[in-house]
Length: 204
Length: 308
Image 1 (cartoon, each protein chain N blue to C red):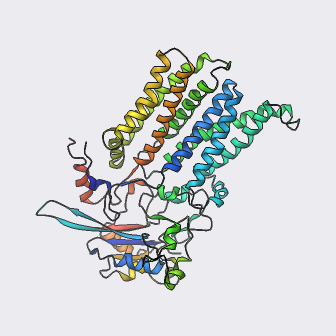
Image 2 (spheres, rainbow over the protein chains, first blue to last red; image 1 turned 45 degrees about the vertical axis):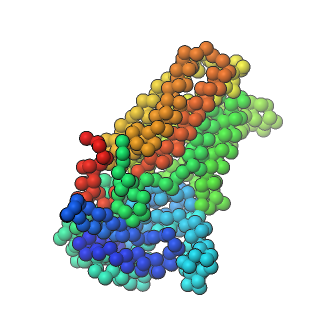
Image 3 (tube, helix red, strand yellow; image 1 turned 90 degrees about the horizontal axis):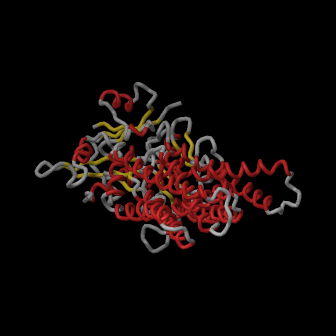
């Protein structure tokens, strides 16, 4: 059984947000809901200023605090390490959102599902089809596109990234590209001091 | 002190510190009613004041439940929250509320002689102990639930359950001072001593909370500054510390006892405690996600304008 993880090569990310758009399209995310974001920051002082882009998504932690605090068991971890939410069990208490240090979870509200992209309270057939996968009042998050992964495909954000800044693979396979990058370029986990042991690594 | 706006996000896609916004008024209200209700029940149990038992039980059963139901995205599924007793303090808290409500009601009916012989006499002490123990869990579990959120340094401390317990007891003692003013309590003289002790202990615990947050992480330091020097300082210092603790402590010590005094003290304690609950949610700060990047270290080096 693989243990899926992702590596972000920050030297390659150009902040185009194609990943975020691909994610929204793949998961039919409502307006204002993002499973992946590219954060930006302007660093340095004039004349040595640069813009830094940092992609983020659910880190699918080995010891997810969201799972620990969930009172219903709605948050669970698959055998391949992907952290999932069973929306039939979720009561929308938001304790997982509060417990996540990575801002990776969103409470789907009824307004999210009733308003369409064109803003006139009507949903397009595409939106109607896609919104049926969400339940208002429950929490949703990135699943590494588990349907695609189960079918042997890569997550939508990885396939779409034009600079190959996102690399997806098996963390348990020493010959996988993700393991090689983590090993050779000293991959770092976000907020390691929180002891969540994320399966997402950054190389700078 | 001026906190650089860029440090506090504001932009959804900006990298930096983030304020906690998910839990707000409804959760603060639920926590508030849960703790003052259970505190009043527990103190009334110890000092033998039946009306306090009823009021305490109602405050928890109605106020806390209403606050949580308003907050929940799927309130009709709330019963599911009892499933994860092994890891979630919310589950443990829900169980405690159920036990507290059930055995608390049974205890009140028992002392009112309304059990119609259905409760064997030998079981009365068991019911009392279970109701009291469940009340103590309701008083502290919210502190444990918040301290379990390691993402937020301000909350992630062992002081949280202690503060919950202190405030619950202090609220209970202050409320019983009003409700039982004309009632002959057992050991009534100890009430003032306990109240003053709790005020002092609460003050020390709040200072300890700020201290532990300040020296544990940059986000914790930002929370401590927000509460003591920046945006929320006037509310925290004035309402929580002065009105909520120092004024009641001084009044209870120096002024002659009267119903008006008890009313003022109880109102001040409750106002301070509710403000504390709200501010604790508002001043919770998340760390920048990529703490290893050099720019974050630069940010940390010049954390606040004007700070040396």
